[in-house]
Length: 441
Image (cartoon, rainbow, N blue to C red; front, side, top):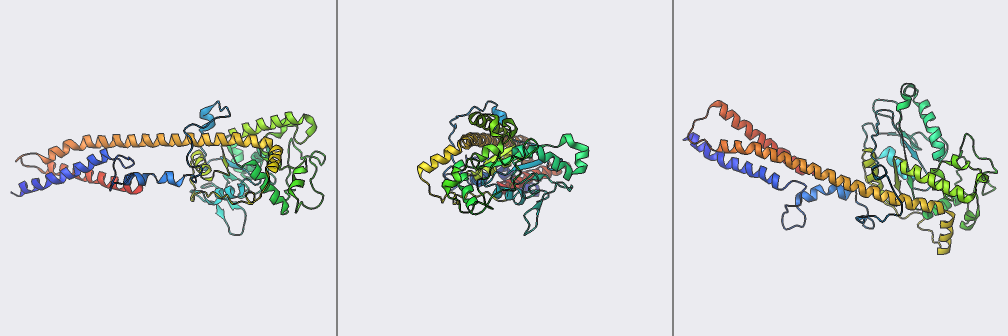
């Protein structure tokens, strides 16, 4: 009688477990096929959409068109758009931040030293500008930037200066590594760009308050420019209080097309010697070089797209930021009211930067769209693999459930009872795993 009673109790319990496993198969956790309470989205789907919400841009630019209208020809699609790099923070790889003035580089530089989830976080002492960013288990720096190594290659060093200086500086800093693995060290260059008019106005306001950057070296082909090659725009200690008109009227003002100049190989145009070729040819060579160097960099971000910049950096390097980037539009440049005539003048003075920024923006948005599509494909593949796993579990447990639920009046031995317990425990474990997945999703 007791055996019959136990069998009657076991049958409904096994049926409930069977239904739970079958429900996992029909309603996967990140599927929108099941909903509760008449809500448009299922409860489980809302949990799984957290990643998209975290990385979403503000409403003004959160949705991209299915196909971006292309002005430029990115011929090597996979290479141009898929910028994932195997950054070996434990090895000898170095991330090099090329900081262009007034592009939001200070904010991004702080993200690099204070906001990345690392096995060994950067050591930032309050009151000190520089942080110590060592590799796990090594007294070597993985980051070359203003906030980690200082201006080791000169104040706001450009691409020409950095590419010739950084390897020497890093080899001197890490002598043991330099001796044993010079050929293995990889340098991954990154930078930030900004809308040229906004950047130009921001630099003017900065100079107007007394900034000069006069200690910058501008090293090229082994020497800095002469005074004749790069004459000063002011005669005193600084250019404090300069009107915008005077700022625009100085022909040697490095604010003009600064982003192109700092990203191009200046050796191609004779450095700062303006007599080596015509102004038109010089501009064409510089622009082409800046586009090539930018496209080949491991990563670049745009000040106007903070969340997309964060997303692409994380996808590129496989690193994660602790806090989300914030889009700040209330800058000093945004508060400057200028006429259309003045805007046209600024765009004319920065025609190369305007062309570079349009190029950079299109490539940036295409990279973002490409990576989002890749991410969705990866998630679909993961869901498919999970469904296949659940099907295998279902095919494995269903015969056991029928066997355990049947048996008629046949007596059971100890071995058979142990088998039933084992299967029940495995099914319970599956259910617990599923519950933990729901919480995580």
